[in-house]
Length: 101
Image (cartoon, rainbow, N blue to C red; front, side, top):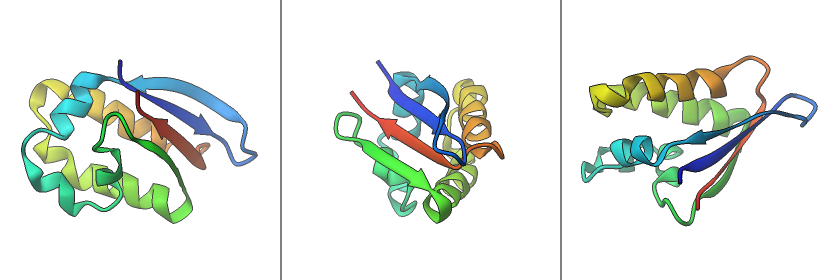
């Protein structure tokens, strides 16, 4: 089971709920420790303890971290990775909640 990602609009109403798959999470946070230098991205590294809310500057920084980190994600997960970035980057999204298992 992957992360639950809940997207909210500017009025704090739910827009969408989707799952960030366990396989994508594992691809991002492989034994490669490069992700540790990305302050917002690393908050998602612990699959069982993650319960994070991102909005405003924190959300923009997470999106920036994800864009910068994209070349480190294996090619077989690139489409899922880009879809995740696209969903949380949508102009209607002002807050996201990401929760692990």
